[in-house]
Length: 347
Ligand code: XIL
Image 1 (tube, rainbow, N blue to C red):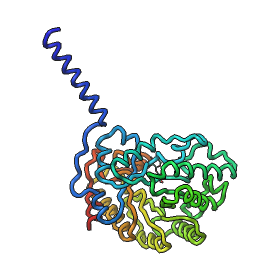
Image 2 (image 1 turned 180 degrees about the horizontal axis):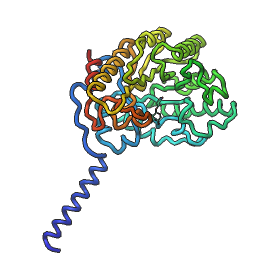
Image 3 (image 1 turned 30 degrees about the vertical axis):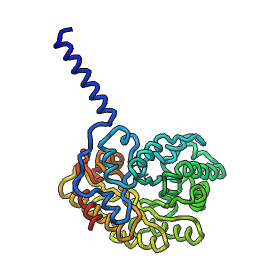
Image 4 (image 1 turned 60 degrees about the horizontal axis):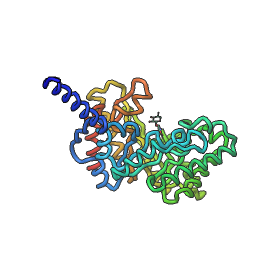
């Protein structure tokens, strides 16, 4: 082969090797975000700051992973610890995807919020066809198996998620229909036995202000406490949009705290009608600031965002015309909301 030919082959081989290395690392490095990291700022306040994470993306997107490591002290698997993901067939568990997130969190010295044990959505089909006795049994087994498996790694669990309907009635989930309201207490009792060290939360959506749903939630939680049922905290999801948050957000959380419960904000985001513009992003930043301020006002344990980049957010994926709901844009560049959260943590 002529010299030129050899050089050409060499160049091609070198490029292939470099490209393979690039893919193996998972792409480009993250650009460092300006200012104090959210995790440092939150630490100074004695609180945890977190995000929902996606296992698949964590594996192949270096910048995504580096941003999570740098900015957050706790992570919540966005889907990987839901019932359909962990126990797709009765008694047959698939832990790999959740394990990968837990492993990554351990390396990054982050805590893990377990989400979620008993929820009406993202259930495997087989759960729906059980009799009452079988369902009670299967639910207990699911809680025991999953909590035992993650005993060393998951310190906080959303034991029951979204048990109330918007009108303030109990949500007519398969658990409610087959087992009645007692399924909630049963789940918490089972969870306490499965891992006595874990903090056990009831997590709810749309209960941020004082309304029919949060009133019912309050009655239920007060009843659980009065009956000696082991519940440690209440999680408020805090999925907002530019209509803003209810004026009685803090007052509402305070009444739950007064029952002797820990408070966490568990899934915060602020969706807007796309495309975003400067005015919308400024309003969004103000709402994010109020979320942090509200959390601090009730001395919350943790504040978790439901994703941190507009490129990976359930809002744009599930709500037509809505999006741009997170702190960073699709290129992981900070939006006004990021600075607002930094300031609200520091102030
Ligand atoms: C969402 C996830 O973000 C989506 O990826 C999935 O398709 C559906 O569930 N309340 C919850 C979360 O408790 O588990 C939901 O997460 C959002 C609403």
